[in-house]
Image 1: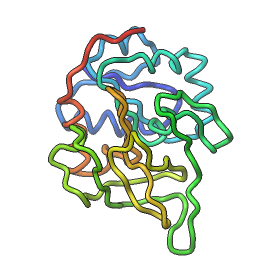
Image 2 (image 1 turned 45 degrees about the horizontal axis):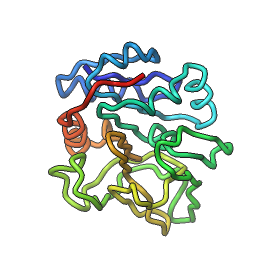
Image 3 (image 1 turned 90 degrees about the vertical axis):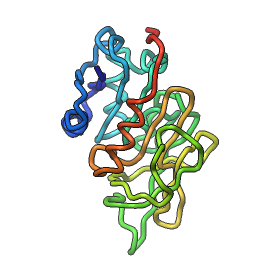
Image 4 (image 1 turned 180 degrees about the vertical axis):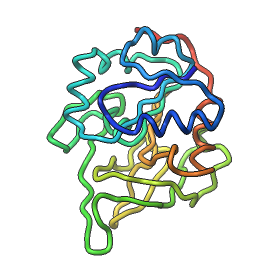
Length: 203
């Protein structure tokens, strides 16, 4: 069973459908007891950082999710909220990654939000990208990005800047792209995530 974190952000239905296509059952919840019974936890999201963090804090999830020791995957806004701070409404986030999320500065040829297919380059031998070649295309929808840092495990170029397409620290990983909307390559990333083992969740 895969737990999907409910926190008022969108895109949960798409993630559930992607898991269904893989034959994986899931539960959507903001209750840590229910999430703690799951083998893996996905933290998806399409929305605004400060509103999402307010929900997480009221539910006590901002601290509890940091303590999860099973495989944990943040998607898009989910990955950004795993960082320390976001420029979006100057929001203090969860601090799993010691990173600051900044606005993408577009131009006439590179619109914001960054929306559509773009290539990524895995920069580490990370199990999340097993069987994913360099240059594979994934689907992005975002206006903010995380710079390349020590926790970066994949990069993506856009608007003259190379940003983190994926991050990892321990069992906590995050991807800026949407694997649930990225066809066979996205399905492979989800399969790779589900293939990772995990220990009991600490609350």
